[in-house]
Amino acid sequence: MKRIDEIDVSYKKVILRCDFNVPIKDGKILSDERISSSLETINYLINNHAKIIIMSHLGKVKTLADKKNNSLYLVYERLSKLLNGNVYFSPYTKGKELENKINSLNYGDVLLMENTRFEDLNDKAESENSDELSKYWASLADIFVNDAFAMTHRKHASNYGISKYLPNAIGFLVDKEIKGLECIVNPKRPFTVIMGGAKVEDKLDYIIDILPKCDYLLVGGGIANSFLSVNYNVGLSLYNKEKKEELKRLLSIYKDKIIMPSDVVVLNNNIVTTKNIKDLCDDDSIYDIGDNTLSIYKDIIDKSMTIFLNGTAGKYEDNRFEKGTKSLLEFVSRANCNSVIGGGDAISSSEYFNVNNFSFISTGGGATLAYIASGKLASME
Ligand code: 3PG
Image (cartoon, rainbow, N blue to C red):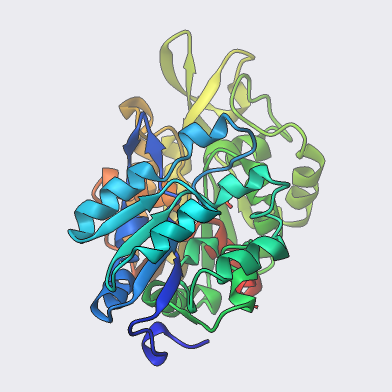
């Protein structure tokens, strides 16, 4: 794979695939790390007088109504501020209006195209890597540059399909990620993976592939609740009911590797208490891991030579439930080993608590987990 500075991009029309799938809440971008991470590549293209067409997805677009909450317009506004130059927006992802916008660009201008997943409303053309769409997008430019590291685990039209029809290269972010992640793709042992976050189904495939490669898997958040639900009553907590059998199987194979919370912080009738996991009632909801769990997790973190942290241990935006997420970030940042955090929520929480001292901060969540699991970047095969 050539890097962008190994090909000639001067005065060329370049499609740059970024991952601007930023966390947005109440109409505000919570972290612009994914935008700022690609600025080096964008500025390189601007300085080389390319005409730059940026593509990205945002969220999932399954119905017409999803378009409203998943527009890249907010990202366009932030990008314009960060670049302080000629940045334009195309609300169209196909057709004459998009082509006219591209034709009116001057060298050094940037055009951000609306969410590539708007094309999913046409038979999932983007997500199912439609050949027709890939070819069409490729026809809009001379060169394709992939800087969407956080998307490298997916083979979609805008990052994989298109690359088959244009001369292409990777951007500086993808290059930096590959180098920064070397220490977890080939880890020194003990290698500990800490995984939190809401949805276990999203991460289950990665958990299955990572378990043989790591020495410990410490779980928090909805992932922990789902594992706990195999043996305990988790009350009203968020957990996955469908995957119980699979989780049970994993717990029996990897009983010494998968470390679950022994105590948790629960909310019940607006009262917050810490409980042993054996003592939960039907109307308790878990929102964080407890102190005893933190001390067990800390011992494992302290003896690890490599750590990867993805997701959060609880509902950290509420200060009653921030301790688990904050403490894990602090333990990992102080650990005397290779420490990497990755993914939107891990980055947002590290910014929130101002804990940033890691060997590497990866923009990838699923992409980084997939890279650890397989050692490959699917979109670049
Ligand atoms: C991510 O945030 O992991 C990437 O942007 C991919 O998003 P997706 O899981 O919606 O495909």
